[in-house]
Image (cartoon, rainbow, N blue to C red; front, top):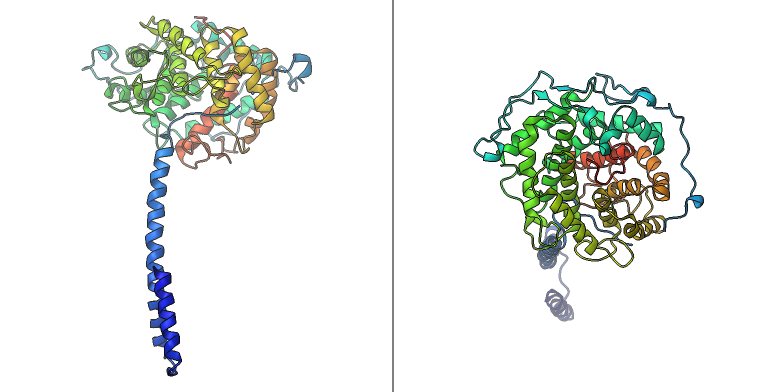
Length: 502
């Protein structure tokens, strides 16, 4: 419409010029004329810009998943052992003796033949600076879990076999057997020091999704064998557990720390439950027992009829990404030896669901049979955690490794970098062992260690996914990257290949 108007105006002006010549215009007259000629065009630009922005936001909103930890991927031969080059050997006693950490207190990094945690004893007494934690006595399941975290009845000597690699001689042997380089353990210590420095005063981590970030951070400390008794990190662990107790009780055992489960909340609940289960197993702290049992109850009750779990625990379908965290939490419940009702049965049903998710190449699908690269590690690890048959898992492992080598190399700043997938792949390959682990260890160990920033965190990545957690600059994004990298590097000793050892 604007174009036709301007054309007609121009033609009329041409006819006028045939009859007389206009006197020269003043500067102000020319300015007014230019404005009059352009105002319709400017108005049209503004209107069209607004329309484009509104439509783009609608399309974006309909396409983007909620900011959770969903992983999706694409396409994956284990080479025979003789075709694989072994990772560089490290001297058995070459664990670094110092770390770049906050000035005080200094991290103790012992030599490999005596490496333990920074804990000084096998019984646990919490540091004296405590906040009195009172759980919600209106919830019957929590009536017994009140008061300070004051006494730890157990000790690291009573750890189940799958977790004995976290301390003492078990850690030294695991590090040597699995070919962990000294710089990898140093990176773990630097990362833990960064987490300690960046813990909020209330004991949590992150500026959003605080349940998930606090659960992931606590898993990192526990994976290194740290408890409230640890010399360097004990108070940090204690503060985190207090935050979980206080807020978990206030929300009736929903550990995403809200009154009702939402889409990302089921991830957060499972992650914190997983951490609380490991904490109980390592400490036998009676104050967390009832809260942990109630949290596991939500997971057991939230399982769908197909054996999987879905957003908001709505049981409408199974989602393998959601299910992976629920299964890890249930495995922690199994190792706790608390005999929580429904745990074994839920894990059995989950295995059937995962098997149903297997694709034609041996990979695993998101919400049905498919070969999704970033979910194949989830399927393999969860099956190995429970009753996995290595013969049925082998095809998926071969496919995953082939795909990594050809299409998605483990490059921290690569265009297809995916920490979420690597978190599962790393554990799955260690559990599977043999040439699968040799190959993956060659790919990931140096890459993750060398990507660490000087202060101990892991920087933003070039590839963006998972709600910008990989490439975001905020505190939760940094905690997310740092915790997943620490957990990957702790794989050498965090869980030993032991499917159902209790």
